[in-house]
Structures are given as structure tokens and as C-alpha cells.
Image (spheres, helix red, strand yellow):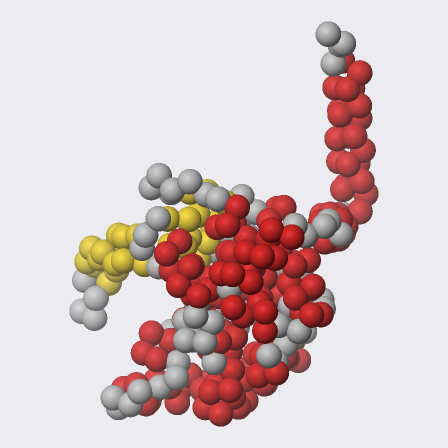
Length: 279
């Protein structure tokens, strides 16, 4: 048997070179370089067939956006660990389907993925979350809720696999847990979720605040009056939830959202860099 010492030495040398390059370029530049390399990798044909079978929205995307989505998927899949919970064995199908729907939010030319994302946790069913919350009287009470998904500020996205499948299977019902939770990740990019993700330049926030403030207030008033709204009561519960639900409607019910809240739609279209009404 040949000695493995030379190969170990080569590996150590390459690791040292990569580390030195990262230090020389800086973390942000090194991340861009690394992701550019992932985007150039071939996209497996079996993954394309999976997307066409499981996610009808993929076939509706223009070819240029399909290609952009595939490139973003390659980055997500290369850099994001997927962890099965409660005995769930994570498959390639699970990883690909989650990554595809998440990448839908990063189709704009200069989108940098999800900078804070550390891992995706998958459950075999909706999961129970136990928390202690204050009630209207200020008393703290234990609370148990069943969730289809969660997004944590420290970089975890938690998803129920059956809900991932359901969201992919019907891309026109306005409900998609992957879009919802990854929208929260964007909102949490620079701190707690507030309904105002990082827009890149301070001069973009006034128009965003005006459009979202008007649509949020209108939705809350209508829901309080017992009127049915496109965003719904859950979206009206907090600005962060409003942004996440509005993102679901933007990608899955674009025409309806553009009619109900035209200024909101324009801001989302500018932020995400696409106009789903054309698909």
C-alpha cells in the first residue's frame, strides 16, 4: 500500500493556501469567490426532472430565470447543511425542493443568497413549539402551538416536510412555508425581524415604509372589522409576519396582490427583482 503522507501534505498545503486567500481577500470577497465557483458547477438532470414533477412553478419561469434559480440552488445546496429531526432521514429530493423554493427569493441579479443561514432543520410533520408569553394582563403563560415552519435569527430555518411538499404542489394558493420562512431570514439579516429587510441603500426605505405601512394598516383595519383580506389575519398580526405573508402572495398570487396593494407590489417587485405577473 502506498504511503498517504504526500497526499496529506498536499491537502494541508491547499488548506493553508485557501486560508491565506480568505484572509487576503476578506470574508465578503472570499464568500463571493466561493459562491461564484459553486454557480459554475453542472446542474444534475435528475434535479431538473424533480423540479418539473414536484414544483409546477418551475416550468412557468422564463428560461433565464430558471437558469438563475439553478445557480442559486447550487450555492444553497453546497453551503447549507440539512438536518433531519424526529427520525426523519433527509433525502436529495427534500434538499432540492427546499432549495428551489428558497432560491425563488434570490432571483435578482445582485442577490447574495441568505448571508446568515446556517442550517435547515426538517421535521416529518408539523411540530409543537412550547414558549412562555405574556398575556393581555401582563401575566406570563405557557403556550403550545403547532407550527409548519420557523425562522431563527441565529440562522436556522425549521420546516415541516409535508408542508414543504404541499406548498410546492400548488403554487397558486398563496401559501408556501418555504417562501414564508426564508422571507423571515431576509428580514432577520441585520437583527430582529421588523418587516423591513435590508434594502441596500437608505434612500429606499421611505418608499418601502410608506407602501408597507399603508397596506399593513389597511389590512389590520379590515380584519378588525371582520372583512376578509388577501393577506389575512396572521399577516396582520405583526409587521414581520406581514412581510413574510406578503412575500407568499407576491410569488403565488401576484395579480391579486397588485390589485389589492399596488404600491406594496411595486416595492416587493423592486426588492425581489422580478415581476411574477409575467410568468
